Amino acid sequence: MEYKVIPFVASIDPKKGTSDHVAEQLESLIKNYNNQGWEYVRLEGVSTYVHAESGCFGPTRAGYTTTRQMVVFRK
Image (cartoon, rainbow, N blue to C red; front, side, top):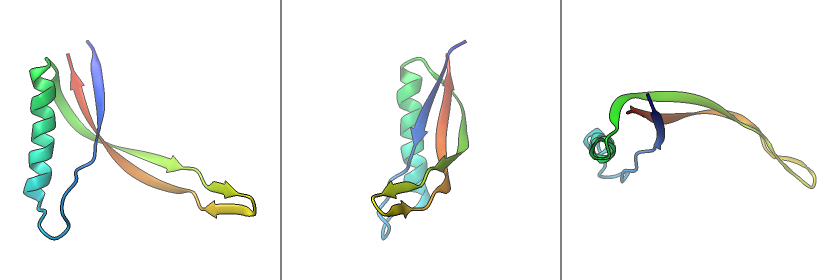
């Protein structure tokens, strides 16, 4: 069995966007990969630590943890 993991970041207008727009983007992504023979498995949250950035005079940005959404498909 093969697996494919695709990052998913929804993009909406902050004034007009709704959760329906996010759902439409995810549905479109799932349909696109389904048409290529991939079966949707799940949406997975992956926590990631982003290291601090260093400049000439020391750290310019502190490190932090963030969560990325990944769509999992299988064949």
